[in-house]
Image (cartoon, rainbow, N blue to C red; front, side):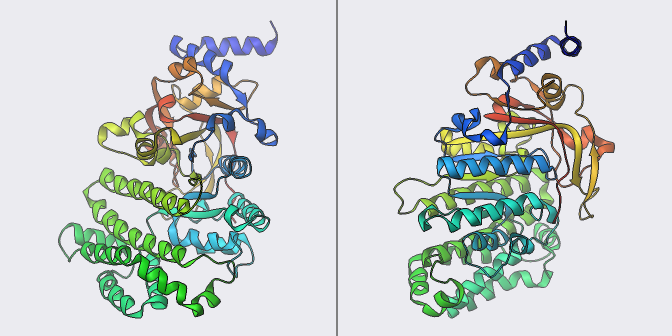
Amino acid sequence: MPETSKLEAEDVAANSPEDQEAIAAIRRAAAPVDARRLHEEPLLRAIANARFVLLGEASHGTEDFYRERASLTRALIVQKGFRAVAVEADWPDALRVNRYVRGQSDDRSAAEALSSFTRFPTWMWRNHATAEFIEWVRQHNAESSPDDQVGFYGIDLYSLYGSIEAVLAYLDEVDPEAAKRARYRYGCFEQFAENLQAYGYAAAFDLTASCEKAAVAQLRELMERSGELARRDGENTAMTASSRGSNGPIAADAHFYAEQNARLVRNAERYYRSMFGGRIPSWNVRDTHMADTLDALDGHLSRDRPAPARIAIWAHNSHLGDARATEMSSLGELNVGQLMRERHGDECFSVGFTTYDGQVTAAPAWDRRAEIQNMRPGLEGSVEALMHDSGIGIGRFQLIFGTDDDLKKALAARRLERAIGVIYAPATERQSHYFEASLSSQFDALIHMDRTGALMQL
């Protein structure tokens, strides 16, 4: 027997019978990941006509995840006509990038367009892999017709004050009287000087009046007056000349952006108020907001189009893998992946990413500076260890669950799965970073990269 085969046989023999069966199924089904041959990728064939492709990551600080996700997204844009990338980032900050990729801003580079991402963790989007992708999108758009250009959007809800400023700036241009009403309503937040956790605590325990009614009233007014305000905006030639240029968005786009900012304010207020009721309620508010934002974006981009929009979504595995397939569901947690599957069924296709070891960019604690840390090997009994044992001689491979019943069955059992967010705590690895999940129910496909490197910050 060749030496490699001996090692493989010994490795498999060390696993449980259940894992041995899974390893055999993985080795039969695994296809190498090769960015140079994306047009031949089994993954692209499996995605077929899905309109929402959810591309995850097992950490917020792994370079390989960001680059492979960008590579797949470029293929979706070029080969399948995707026209939007929606990311786990705040709406107003991402809109600055959106203007840059469409040639509608004064920013001179992707790095400059990303400079609005100043809130911790800045490295999630201010990194070289994201900047290179944004430059590619800008070049693609420059060579495309307006109808074929690709947008870049944020779906998260942390930017309450930034979104308030954006709503006020829009109304100052189209309806100064409406802007006065909005300032009065949003004035409710002023006493907290952008300390939203302080607001959430005070509102949750009735130490101050909640700003919920004010935020809801402002969103309702924008929604009810959408046609009128968009019409005023279209007639405002000064705004058109000063901030849009000949290729800028139409008035309906500007109104949609403002309405989405108002929706973010409403949901962010709810999020910060719910934080003191436990982790699950605030998580559910956040992920429901992200799913609702995707639906609103879909409706806007599909408006007056012969075919509905197709959107690539970038976020952590914990947001995009179906929560019903994880232990978190028993605690009442839902997520974007679950909501999008429930709402859109087969129009969704989700791809998870895993790694066994390497390095990761992460902070040791919240609001601390990011550093490059060594990532521990996947725990025994985990998805990561199983993939490592299965991938000898391959290293990087993809698995498609929907087209292989044997593989899907073999990976249906609950196993530990690692999730590293913006904080990495190797001293408490099991408690801090692992949960149980049924991999083949959680995702439609998986990309495993056995050893990965740390994300490089700008």
